[in-house]
Length: 411
Ligand code: MLT
Image (cartoon, rainbow, N blue to C red; front, side, top):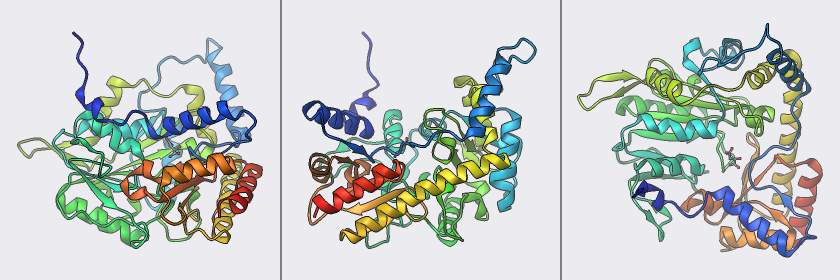
């Protein structure tokens, strides 16, 4: 008799964004004429940059000729892409990385979900609350957490770090010891950032406690203000304790193309039961070479084109477009009297729902009365209750229309 991994039974019925899609589809069936604007899942709407498309076309041509055809590539990515990543994303910020410290992959979602495999199931993990649900759900599947407490909206054996309005959406250090710490800045869902000094507090904590920080910086390209760190390695000592996840999804419109990378410095040690240290980098390489066969050559060629002079200009224009959407949403909601966070250095705007209205209640109201879809804050954790997330990744036209509708219909 086939037996289930019981940990899967601890999970709520469906993944947050699948649940939203289900509700929207149900509404569409009942209201086929409703002109719905989707600002829920953070999926991009602008096409790939022309240089990326051109590079991918050329790479496909190469794959069709015997002299230039390629079979399996290196599991951790082609050197031509890794070199560009280091030279453009890190070296200019004073961060030196080795070629074998960067692992190209098909997405930050899969990497952040998979990375926990290297950690023993008895590790105590800390997450911010609200949080991107992948960090939590992947650990639930692995059996690292307790059961879900429906009353609290939280799992046992996870240390939740509340990000509240009073605390300006910034987490405080855990009061009980933890081993794994998930941080995401610029933050999904709140859109808020940490200063270098604030990030240093986490790096210092991890160094003192032999903890490891899993730092998701998928949204770094959206930072507009000076002085906001784009990489955790800008903080001294981070090489000893932090893994960093990056993605081309939001930066260069690769949500449907799939390419990302993860940095695992060789300085990071993870310990066995005797207290002996092992290289995290080696273990991740072992994991990837066993379970992953690399990103396709045309996609990596496309990603490398992002770093050409033309590519940089083209993707910057798209980022500027989205950040103008963010401004329209943020200022529009403020004019309508809502309290908002984020949207300055991130493509997410985190708004407070009116009065005592719950997140899902606001979701239903917004969808049925304004035909606008967002993401209920409660879907990101107990502290997300009473909040709602809108993304800046829509088209300009839809973004403007959505804000007009919210202003007119949601007071
Ligand atoms: C989100 O909406 O939070 C993101 O699209 C999720 C993701 O990148 O997987």
